[in-house]
Length: 591
Image 1 (tube, rainbow, N blue to C red):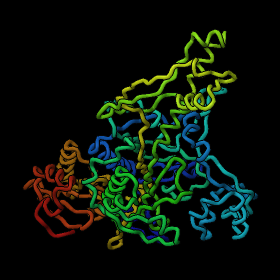
Image 2: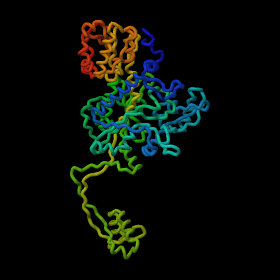
Image 3: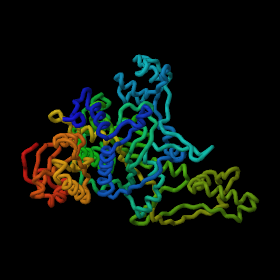
Image 4: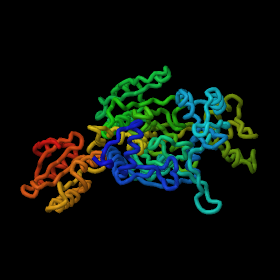
C-alpha cells in the first residue's frame, strides 16, 4: 500500500490523526500557510467543502424544507448601533491576560481551567479574582514562561468603519441573529402577518478570539446557523410537539452541576415540559430536532447531552439556555449548538433604539367593551381664571388620571395641576365607552443556534476509524462528500472508456462521483476509504460482456454485482435510505 493511502496509526490522539489526514486529503488546513499561518482561520479543501455543504444541507432539510422556516442572507458587517442596541458592545467581552515578555495574549479563564478550576467558577470571577488565582496557581506564559500582566476585559467583536475617513463605526457580526431581528417587520409581512414563524440564516460570523488553539472548535471566522422562531407568549403551543414527545433528551441539570456532578438525567420531551425542566414547547421541539440532527451526522445519543446553563453563564438576552454538547476525543464535551429562550429582549431593544414599532397586532376572539371615567375641563370657566394659560392647564389636566382627579377633588375640593388649583365646578365628570378589538404585543423568540464548523468536525471525528491498519471515514450516507467512486480495473482495452461513460451517466443522474484509474485496484479502494467514498463501482472485463459492475461497500468491504441499467435507480434508493447495501445486487466474494 502506498504512503498516500496507508493509515499512519495515530501517534498521539485522534485529534492529531484527523488533522493530519484532513490536510493530506484536502478536508481542511490552516489558512495562509505560506506566510506562517494565522490562528483561528481555516481553508476548506475540495472534500471538506463538500462535506460542510452536506452538513449545512441537513440543517436546511430539517428546518427550511420540512418545517417551512424562512431562510435569508444578509451582510456580515453591521452598523455599530445594531450591536449597541442588542447589548453585544457591553457584554461580548472575555477576560484576557498578556505575557509581559513575549506579549502573547491568552483567555484568562481558559488558563484557569487548565489548572483544574471549573469553567463555571472561572466565568463568574471578577478581574481581581482572576489575577489572584493566576498568582495562587503560579500560572505563567505557556509559550515563553514569562509572567502575566493585569487581566482586562477584551471586546471580541471585529471593529471597522463603514465609509472612508471618519465613517460610522461598524462591527463584523459575532452571530447571525441580529440580522433577523432588525428585519422582523419585513419577515412578518412575508408570513402574511401570522405567528408563529421562523427565520434561519446560515453564514459567516466573526469573533476576534484571544487565543484560538482548538482547530475547528474555536475559530475567528466561522459559519453559524441561527434560527429565530417568533411566537405569541400567550400561546406557546408547538404544532409539531406530538412528533417528538417520546424523544429522550439527556440533560445535565443545573442542580446536578452545582453538586459538582456530571450525571445526566434522561427525560422524554413530554416529561421535561410537564416538570418545567424546559419552559417552552418550541424550545423542547428544537432541542429534540437538534438531537436527531447529530444522530444523522453519526453521533449516537449516548455521546450527546444538553447542559442547562447556570444563571451567570447565560447570555444577557436569555431567560433559559441549554448547550447541546458532544463528547470528542481531545477536548471532552464540546458545544455544537445553543438553545436559548430569548423572550422579547431583542425586539424590545431594537424597537427602543430605532424608534420603529416592532409589535404585532392580535385580534380578540370577542371584542372587549369597557367604560372609562373621563374628566373634561369646562373651558368657559378656565378662561376667566387662568387667562392665557387656560389651554396649557387643560392640557396638563388631561395627563392626570381621572381616578386621581376625583380622589383629590373629593378630599380637598380641588386638584393641583402644576402651580394651579382646579376646582370641581371647573370640570365635568362622565363615562366613555370603548371597544377594544385587539391588542399589540412584542413576540417572544426561541433560538436554536448551530456552529457549522463544529458540526463538521464532530461528523469527521465520529466517522474516523481504523480497520486492518487502514483509515476509513465512515460518513453517514446523507453527508458523504463523494457518493460513488468509478474504477476501471485496467486503464486499457476499453475499460477506461466504459468507466468514463458510466461516470457521465451517474453525474447526469445527480450523483457526486470520483474517477480513479491510478495504481492497483486495492490502492484505489484504500484511497477511497480514507476519503469517505461511500461506494466503489469497478468496471472489469465481465462488464464488457454482460454490462454488469461490481459495487464495493466502504465500511464492510462487501461486494455485490449488478446491472448498469439498474444502477442509477438502485443508488437513488440507497442514498435516500430506502434500501441497504445488500439490496444493490448479488453478493460476490469480498476483496
